[in-house]
Every structure is written in C-alpha cells, then in structure tokens.
Image (cartoon, rainbow, N blue to C red; front, side, top):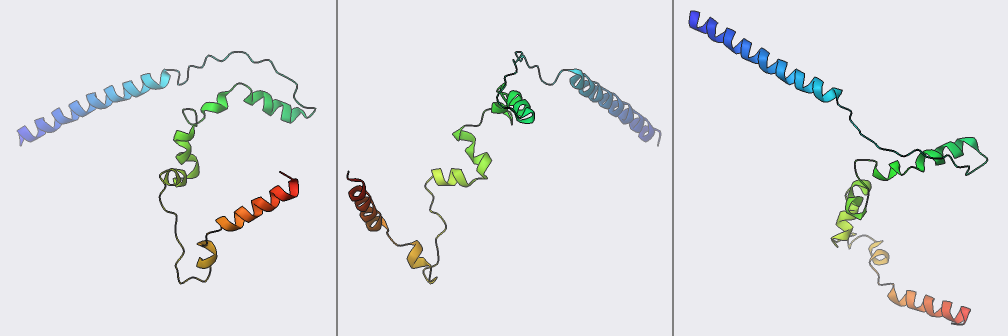
Length: 129
C-alpha cells in the first residue's frame, strides 16, 4: 500500500514538473513578436476624390495583400482558391458526363466544331479579312 502511495506522489511530481516546463515554453513563445515586419513608410497618394476609396487604395499599396494566407498565391496554389476543381481540370480528368438517356445529352455531347468554323468564316467575310 505504501509503495502505491509513493508511486502516485512521484508521478504527480513528475507531471507537475513537465506541465510547468511546457507552460514556461508556451509563455516564452507568446512573448516573442509573432511577425517581424520591416515595412517601409508609405507615402499616401491621392488616387481619388473619395476619401474612403483613397484610404483603402493607400492601405493596399504596400503589397501586404500579395502574401495573405502565408505566401504568394500562384497557379500552384490555385487549387486552394477554387476548392479542388482547378487541380482536376489541369490533370485532364474527364468532367462529369451526362447520362446518354438524358434528352439534353445530344446537345451537350454534340461536336460543335463545324458550327464554330462556319461562324468564323462568316465573321471573316463580314469584316473583310
């Protein structure tokens, strides 16, 4: 029985020490500045007669908006913006097809290349090209 009590006290002491160390680490990290920005002073420009619009344009003139979300948005990160559809499109995965039994299938699956060629020819004739 005494051995059990001693073990419990030892475990409690170890847990206290570990929690205190973890809390100290978190407090130290919270005290550090989260963002060290070296932003150059921006001269306010007069873009518009509207003061509100002018303020907004001057706020975005410092290029901070380019890295919203942690880093710059390029085509590599386009998938994040459009919710996964862009990546599928770039992989040339087939789009959802319409059931052949659907009456609209003939319109959606029809080859319109001839129609487009005729329209282009007509446009060229119209403009004399």
